[in-house]
Length: 261
Image (cartoon, rainbow, N blue to C red):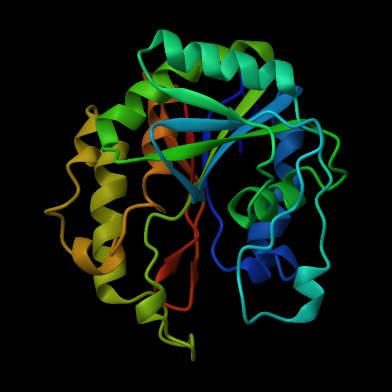
């Protein structure tokens, strides 16, 4: 990534939890990324793997635990820890900004960091010294609500806070190609291409009307992995949108990452 004058919101695809161990080109890119960013004082991350009823929730604990919210993987994966500190003051500011925007938000002092948060952060900040606050995805929700929430959080960027959405533009666990030799499925490429074309256009908000896009039904069987995109888009409104990494896992998991603004 080129040098940037201010912290851009990022949308990071987190793929399979095995990327925590076998990061490959994706992990190498994340590890190199801080060298092209201004100093990062803290992280606000919203992951596909924390959904809450009754509005947003935000982690307020000083030492969020590492959550291993998956099954059937090698034992070594369950032994990994990501002991980043929390930041109660940053969490309070996140809550205040969302409340000012008319959103319901509650503190959660017990919630830790799920794998959608700590798997990419383990490569991005491997020393786990940068404080991390996680924000949930509310149920119910719709893209324009999330976009507006992202806009409300945008002022954090001026204070050295990195805003991260973690999910995947294409994420269908029911259509995995375990041989992996055929590359991305045609419907997956079609949907991602449609989405990216609109994101880099003069009207990126048009991507929020994705349901009728080619391959949408197969690419987004449920919305939780796509929805963090809209928060990142809102936080970076008005800036250039770029692909900063691209790749695929098992035919139906996109690893494309984007920078906003």
